Length: 59
Image (cartoon, rainbow, N blue to C red; front, side, top):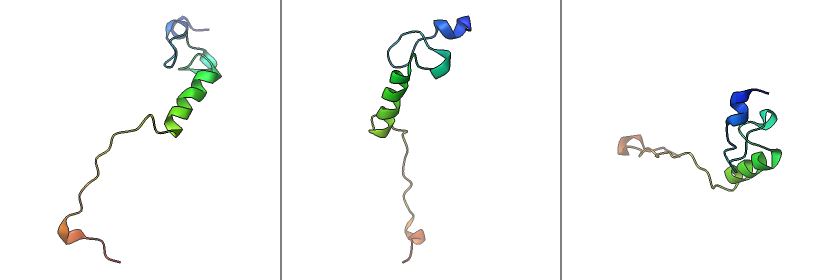
């Protein structure tokens, strides 16, 4: 095991990372993170562009 990886902390609970499920310490923490994405707790910020009046989509 790499010493650098063993000193890094799990992004969910703070325990030492496991190389097999990096950047997490266990499959459980990886699943917690995945559930947060699925439930919408995490989101990538985005700005919607306004459509100019002359470029209004036609049906």
